[in-house]
Length: 259
Image 1: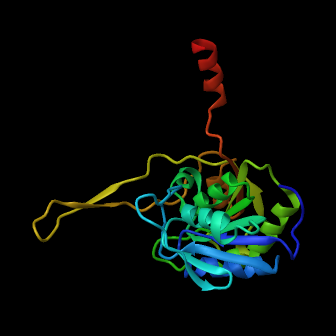
Image 2: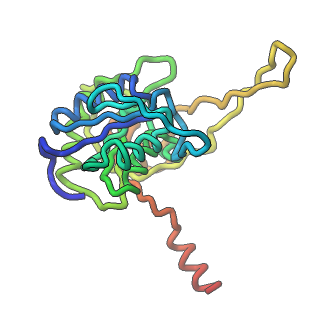
C-alpha cells in the first residue's frame, strides 16, 4: 500500500467485540478525522477468539442499522467478506481498520484474535488493513483514552509510510494512561511460554465437570525486539504480519531432500 490519507478515502471499520462495543466507537471517531466516507460493518454479538473463522453451516443475515452501518450475525471474517463482496461491492474500501479491541493481541494470541482476523481477511481481499488493540488488566477498566489520544497519529503515520499488499499491521497500545506512553516501536511478533490452563469445576447438578480456559497472564519479556517487550516499555507496539506461513529454511531443506 502506498499513498497518504485523504478525505475521499473509503474506510471500513470492523472488530470482534461487536458493533456496540466502546472500542469500535472510538475507532469510528478517529476514522472520521481521516475520511468523510466511513463504513462500520461488525458482528452483531461479541466474537472474541473466533480467529479467522467463517460461518458455513447457516446463512448470514446482515442488518442495516444506518446508511453506512451494518450488523452481521457472524464472525469478523464474515463481516469483512460481506462488506467487500456485497454491502460495499460498488466500490470496495481503500482501508480496513479493525478494533479497537478490549485487550491486547500480542505474540501467539494473534492466531486466536478475531480483531487480527478481520485485518487478515481484508488483506486476502486486497485491502490494506490495520488491527488495533488496547491492552488492559483483568477486572480493571480499559484505558480507552490511551488509544483514542495516540491512535490517529499512528494510523496516519502508517498510511504515510505504506506497506506491501500481503502484509497487515498489528498495533497494540499499552495499559497505561495516555500521558505515560513512552513513544512507539516497531516490534517482532513475540512468543510466550505455555500459558493456557484449564480450570476445572464440579457441576452442582451432578453432571460431568466443566472447564474454563484460564485467563492470559501478564506479559513476559521473551526478547528485546518482541511486541511483548515493547509493551512492557510502555511503548505502542507496531508489528507487520505476513500471511505466508511457509517456513523458508525448512522449505529449502525439504525441497533439496525430497524433490
